[in-house]
Amino acid sequence: MLATLVVSSLIDSLIVIRSTEMDGVSESDLENINKFMELALHQAKCAFDNLEVPIGCVLVEDGEVIATGFNRTSETRNATRHAEMEAIDTLLEKWQKCSLSKSQVAQKFSNCILYVTCEPCIMCAMALSILGIREVFFGCANDKFGGCGSILSLHKSETDNKCRQVDGASQSKGFKCMGGYMADEAVSLLRSFYEQGNPNAPKPHRPVRVLQAPQKS
Image (cartoon, rainbow, N blue to C red; front, side, top):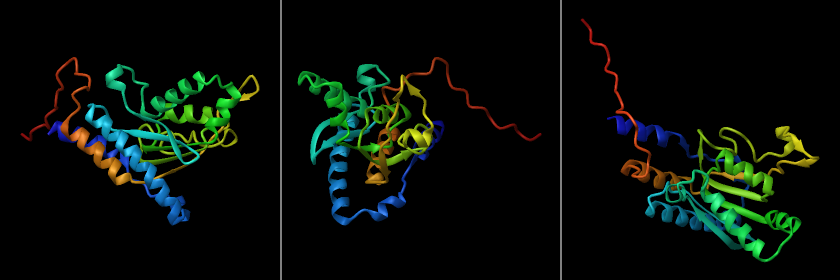
């Protein structure tokens, strides 16, 4: 019973949203978005097969996938290794080998679009904003950790968020963000993962006590 309640709570935090902005998307654009979202879902399935929380993403430049990523937090024992961070680090390593300057890297990121199965968390959304990603499309929203509207709106411009500046330079640039694409598929995958149980979840140090309701005398 307790396990069922826990799973229910986790799934309830994954909201299938239907952005009003989607109404203005043309049929050809929607087909293109769904094509890349399917690739992101494939990455999420790779995470699932590796006993990781099934979230995946692809980074696209000029219509071509240039990096992919899926959650590797359990494998690496590093809570920051989200799908987005995996893809970003792949690109940074690649561009570093090409001896690109900081300005060139910034320019490259400004031409990239991210497709990810779940709304970027606060950490990832801030990283994407600082890097100056051009646009983000995501599947389901997360009302506990979402950084693109659910909890914080880090995708908005610095002016909107009234962010501080460091040494006269912007901490975040903001980016266009829309969600609700193939959200049902993203939630279904997450539901399957949590319902089967996460073998990599930390074990409680003490037994969990379930308080009984007081009996009437």
